[in-house]
Structure formats: C-alpha cells, structure tokens
Image (cartoon, rainbow, N blue to C red; front, side, top):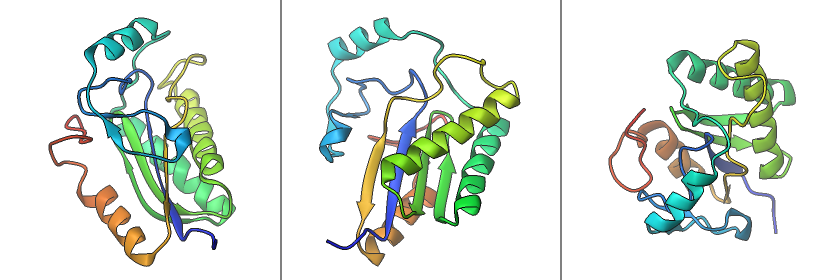
Length: 166
C-alpha cells in the first residue's frame, strides 16, 4: 500500500471533550475508526469526576503561539503543512510528513506545550492536551482538498463536532 498523501490530525485540550460528550465522541482512536458515538451522560459524568487538573481553553494569543510552534516544526523538518486551525479547545492540522501520524501529532503537541510554558500561558506541570487524538489518512488528492476545506472553512458551523467557542 502506498504512503498516504497527507494526514488530518485533530486533538483536544485537556478536560474539554470527554468520553460521552453530547457533541459526539470517538470511542477508540487506536482502532483507526473516527466514527462518533452518541452522547452518554453517565460516561461523561464519570470522566468529569476523574479530571486531575484544570480544563484548558486557549485565547487568541495562545492560539497564535500554538500555530507558530506547529509551523516551526513543519519548517524545521521540511514537512508540508497544508492547513492549520487552532481553536479554543482543539487543533486541526493537515500535513504531509514522512513519519507516522502519531509521531507528527506528538511532536506538534510537545513543541506547542513548550512554547505555552515558556510564555507562562500554562503551568509548568500538568496536562495540556488529551492523551491521543484523531489521525486520518488522506490517500487521494480529493481527500486532501476536502480536509483542507474542512479545517479552514468549516470550523464555525454548528452541529456535531463543531466548536462554537472559537
């Protein structure tokens, strides 16, 4: 099987999109399936009780720091950044990289966290991001175009998966 043309990577900030969320949630990212499960109030309440730190939201200056860190990783590693959208509680990136998507996501999270800590935006310890995220393989030019369109133009829509908070 040929390498994918790009990846659509999505991850959330700590404590903001829990299992059972009424907007929908992905049951098992590791399975390769990114299909949304319906809301589940009991599961969400259980996860809310288990949060071990503050819920993280980003304002516009913090979002610019994160975007700059991700652009810097891509520039330094000569990865092709097709699209990026840093929201108050999640990040979307469409990237072509010669590494597994989990490695790219981990690098983006690590460098973003470093920049946020250096700027005093988040505490020196504690979680900033969720444990994993969504890693979609984009195997055709059409799928890359659709992903870029989604990341750049469809983030302000209302409905399942939308982030109305910006």
